[in-house]
Each structure stands twice: as C-alpha cells, then as structure tokens.
Length: 236
Ligand code: SAM
Image (cartoon, rainbow, N blue to C red; front, side, top):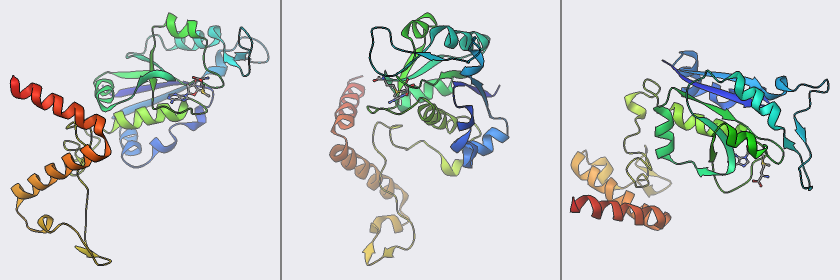
C-alpha cells in the first residue's frame, strides 16, 4: 500500500534527485512510497525518436506531440491515482491539494518541456493541471519534485513525532510562529523571554499571538481568509 509516484518525463535521470535524500530518501528506501519514471522518448515511433513538433498556427518553440504523450499515458493506464499535468496554467498548488494527493494511492505526473504539451491529449485523459506558482520553469520536472516532496512528508511513517506538522504554516490557516534555539542570547540579541519560562500554556499563547501577527503583516490574503473562517465557525 505504498504511495506510488509515476513520472512521464524526457529527463528520467532528474529523479529521484533531491528526493533521494533525508526523510524522502529514507522513506523511499523503506518502501513507504515508490517512484517509477518513464522516458517519453521511448514512446516515439519514428526512427529519429521525435517527441515534438512546431506549433500549429506558427510561432516560436516546439510542442510535445499528442500521439507520443498518449502512448506514454496508455502505458501507465493501470496505475491508480489522478493524472497530473504540471502546467503554469494549472490550479495553484496549496497544502489542501497536497493533503488530498497524499490520501490517494499515488499519482501520475506528466512533465512538459519546450512550449508544453498538445492540449488535446491533456483533455482526452481528463488530466488535472497543477501549477506550483506564477512563474515559468523550463520543465515540469522540478514542479513534480516539488509536489512529491510536499506529499511524501505527509505519508504515515515518514516523519517522526519530533518533526510533526500539526502547527505548521498553512495547516492551521496561519503562518507558523518564529523559531528560536540556543543560545538564549546570541550576538547580544535575546530570544523571547517567555520561551525559556517552561510555562507551556503561556508559551502556546505567545506562539499563537505571534502566528497571528506574522500572518497579518506578511500575508494579508491568508489573514482575511482566517478571520472569515473564524467568524463562520463561531456562528455555527
Ligand atoms: N509556454 C508555456 C506557457 O507560457 O504557459 C510554458 C511552458 S514551460 C517553458 C515548459 C513546461 O514546464 C510546461 O509544459 C510545464 O510542464 C512546466 N512548467 C513551467 N512552469 C511551471 C509552473 N509554474 N508550474 C508547473 N509546471 C510548470
């Protein structure tokens, strides 16, 4: 019952890359999640192994061919989970989407290159389009790595209690409070005194107040949504 990531890419050597390290790498070795890459080029039919062609209607760049991408998707038809096309036009990734993905048996990720993928094959496979932010990457691989990293750390058994994610930014609707460690005074700068008090309730109150203050100043958009949710749940 491991969470299975299946990746369709022109650059299979980019995986597991950073996901081969630390918690993600350890849990991959332990079989908590699995990773399979397919080289899109293996599904090209001509002797030059062509995967792309010029855009219909003209313009610069190249577009991944629908027949080649379709053949790659057909090859993983039996794999459970959503089909995700990483795309700057997709729905923006957030922690709620990450949680939903972690609850699936896995996912198939299609990594675009060049100008992208012929839209007909995206539509024919009813793929979910997911963006990791409003900027343009050179390919979908780094985006897929990002999504998988966020999912894997939520899988049961990946993180110990010590690295738990209950209070983390976005889990509570707030950004997390600031963190401090020893020494209590560093370069003449004191860490907040309350944190050394051992008074757990007051520390929790301080952290919540800090989380609220930081969310309000750094992310007014999140703060507004937080207040809306609070007023809704207090009316219920
Ligand atoms: N011509 C496309 C556009 O303007 O929307 C951009 C293509 S981009 C150079 C090549 C590939 O990188 C895309 O097909 C997609 O798979 C991936 N990509 C680029 N930016 C991304 C983002 N913000 N989120 C997810 N994938 C992205």
